[in-house]
Amino acid sequence: MSITIDRIKKSFGKFQALNDVSLDIPEGKLTALLGPSGSGKTTLLRIIAGLESSDSGRVLFGGDDVSNLHVRDRNIGFVFQHYALFKHLTVAQNIAFGLESLPRRSRPSKQEINERVAKLLEMIQLPQLADRYPAQLSGGQKQRVALARALATKPRILLLDEPFGALDAKVRKDLRRWLRALHDEFHFTSIFVTHDQEEALELSDQVVVMSQGQVEQVNSPTGLYARPESRFVFDFLGHVNVLSGVVKGQSLVQGNARVALPGVVNNQEAQLYLRPHEVQLAKAPVAHARLPLRIEAISLIGSEVRIELAPEGWESNEIWEVGMSHGEFACHNPTRGELWYAIPAVGHLFAGDSAQPETVDWHSTAHASAANM
Ligand SMILES: Nc1ncnc2c1ncn2[C@@H]1O[C@H](COP(=O)(O)OP(=O)(O)OP(=O)(O)O)[C@@H](O)[C@H]1O
Image (cartoon, rainbow, N blue to C red; front, side, top):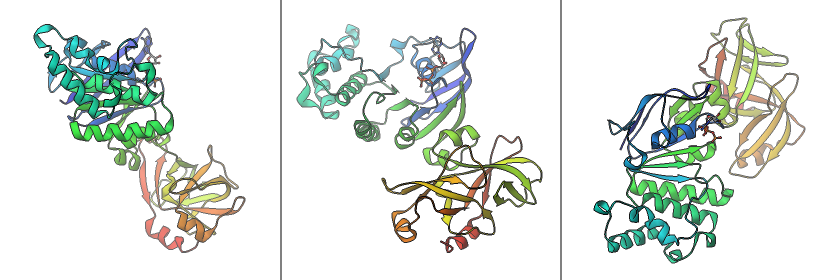
């Protein structure tokens, strides 16, 4: 069941929580609503659910306007951050609750309910815990039961609001993988609220980045990371290295730093954004870039070595980060306190007042410079 959000506005008093939001949520896909605290994610989710009404605009399910439909009639499953399991009911009774509460004419028989609960217990891989009470479960187990309960009435749409927010990092990761696998098997249309970029990128088919009650950008995780369309998305999604300066003589210049930018208008202010993987380190500057940096920290944990560097003779608001394979690291052995030069291969330039970046590609030059290391 696809979902269409059509020009939704919502204010709380004078505060505009959602400002003309339009969005298409594709059928059978997992869509993440990602954004900083207060950007309007939960408000949008609650309007889709029918738990909150909008001031204007429409919500459509599969093309049908459901804006005036009661939450009960929207056939939606919910999972929230704080497990809202009934303490006095067992796991099996919690899962059966939605089915037992259906009006008599649509309620399945006792036997059918038992069978469906048994199937859901299998699905969440907890059949052995059917007779336990919520207090006897771990946080991760409680969230799995909450999910089974949400799915018991076979909803067309599943809404999840920071479902793993209260769990520790390891359990979160396991549950993410498990939810993704479950989704791939059952294909419900899901919307997932999170402010954790890693979670959004790892779990979803489509990411909606929100800021101040508006949609900033919608794309697949890879598309969003590779082609951010605004400074906000750049800053919000992963680390980014920034050189701010003025364009002079076909180069972006600030203090000791200089990067060649053929074709850019002189004498305007500009910011060059570089992802850690778009930069290499060399012992000397190259023709298209002179970006001296001193190594401040080296982190060997993870699949890549992460090197943090501070500008030398120029300034940057944040520390720079460059990724390097463990093989490269062993070969070049960069050490804390040493002076190195960042060599950009691809960059994203915001020149003057432009809200959208222009991609600059120095690839051929960068390959030549890698030999410098
Ligand atoms: N019932 C309400 N009354 C008044 N203001 C509200 C209400 N609900 C939300 N807001 C305000 O609307 C804004 C958006 O809130 P919302 O919960 O949608 O943000 P969010 O992106 O989900 O944030 P978080 O990640 O912190 O949950 C916030 O500034 C919040 O204070």
